[in-house]
Image (cartoon, rainbow, N blue to C red; front, side, top):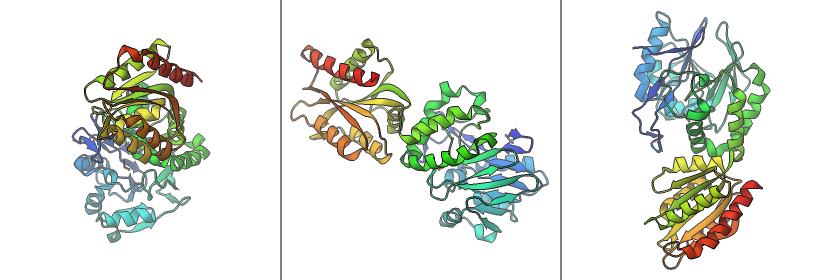
Length: 404
Ligand code: FEO
């Protein structure tokens, strides 16, 4: 059965939802699913903007067959070659042998690398500023390198104001019938997954996102729809989401608050983390979240780290090092280029406690523009009441820094 949604009178969402894939890119959990968005423009010529993941290609084909009817598909515009969008290219080429393809030079290079067959079709290589008219609609192409791969571009329809934004402005979570961001409570139900999607996938490339935002800024009054490759289409409140993207890509905290991430083997470091959380709340800093790094996928930890201004790392010493999952969290922060946060440390060790010094060294030497508060809580095996004063000092230092 076809399943399409109308964006405008001649532009349709022809994508599909995926609740079967457990790990996006085979690494990030997606318990609420994901959508792969493709869009069909029924102009004088017909145009498909991107395709979908192989797992839902049948749904996209049913959608296209339904909307095209007796018409043929004339053009395939490929903004981004990652297989969650490009996997169905050859299916399209085989079904409509006369379809012509538009993409960037690197896009065609990747198409060939992935084993697709664009050269059996008429192709048009485009660069930034090129335009193409499909009859009534004229589009222009804008380079978006590293958002998320080097070949990426976005396409702007000058006629109806639709910006086909590729991975930019996307989100995890399946659409499940909804299409527009104003059909969901985005700030309540989607923002955490939108952040987790963006920062884990493109977080490393903040400056490239900034560049794209700058380009979008020059046409912001002409944009009527933002049509990403995942998640809902935006037709209002652009400022809300653009502001989030601006903060995330400048590595500025979204909120003043504290992420306490703890690595605990038998619950004693956890107890210290919880005691600190209670002290912070008691002192008026209630925007606090506590995560067990052993039970929280690192993609969620990274998302929370991007959200909050302050991060407390509480770790046991393990093999004379940082507990492995905590070390993995630090490595991911480094890989994704997180910056501009204030850290506080809690260390635990029954003998030869090392985790505090090692975490401090990692933050100072491997991460950029980070501050580590001087006050550190050190516990030996478990935290007794004799540590209450030290805990108080640490909590006061964090509160003062948060409120600064
Ligand atoms: Fe949704 Fe970079 O692909």
